[in-house]
Each structure stands twice: as C-alpha cells, then as structure tokens.
Image 1 (cartoon, rainbow, N blue to C red):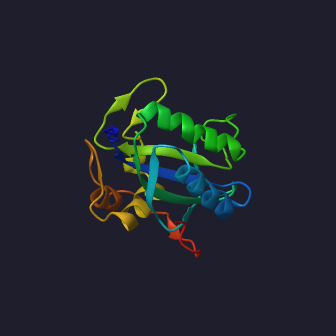
Image 2: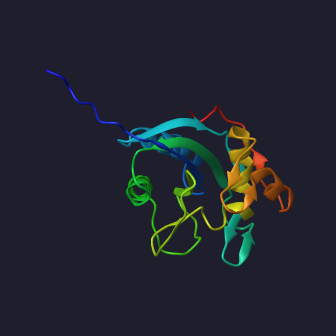
Length: 176
C-alpha cells in the first residue's frame, strides 16, 4: 500500500512586532514563541530588539512609553488572511485592545511582506504600506537580511538611509 504525502508549500514572510505597554520584552518573546506554534508557520529567525519613541497619528509622542520592536522571518503555508487572523489572535491573547488608531498597545504584529504577493483590501495590505518609512521595521529587518527589499518599493538599506532613524539597540538576549 502506497501512502500519499501532501506537498506543503511555505512562502517567506516578514513580520514586524512592537510593544509599548507592560513587560514589553517578555511580551515580544512570548509572541515569537506563539507564532512558532501556529500550524503551518515556521519561524526561521528573530532580530534583536530595538527601541523607538511612540509614533502616534500626530507624530512622535515622547510623553508615551517607548516601543520595543523586532522583526521575525518565517515561512507560512497559510494564505495571507488566515495568517493575519492567527496573528490577531495572538495579539488579543497578549492583551491587545483596539480603541485608538496608532494608540499604545501591549502587542502589535504586522505582516510586512508575504513572498512577493501584493494584497490590498479592507483587511490587509501587503507589503505593509508604511514599512518603507519606519526605522523600527527596517533596522531589525536589516539585522536579519542585509539584502532585504520592500516589494515594489526598493532596498530596505536605501530606504533606511533616506529617513530619520530613531531606533536604538536594546540590550537583551536574542528573541529566537
């Protein structure tokens, strides 16, 4: 009797994580672990932590708690919306409340890229529409992949060179 195996295709994804409430480092560590437990997702690497001031709709808010940020490189057999649903579940499990747009949060997980897929609907935009403008995404991403590229936009290194870089290293053990 021949057993049939199903081929599982996993595509590369880049995830950006951030936290500015509670035990930020612990939350991010637990989030990376939770991502690794999603059926159909394989975590390959996680950046070190970078710290940045809070960015609100009105701009930088130095009175708000600063963020710790990281990037995770993974592979996903899930389609983008299914992955988003799992990431939002993890956010909720870690106390994420969605009251204020760009408000303070215990955990934020964004899909930055998903292979070279382009998605733009009411729920999801890939690549992330502001990733190319955010040092808190580009700095940790470049730690993991010096040749990183935002699809349709350009080299992460060149993009970072053209924006204000307010990200500073945060002394901590590696996340993964």
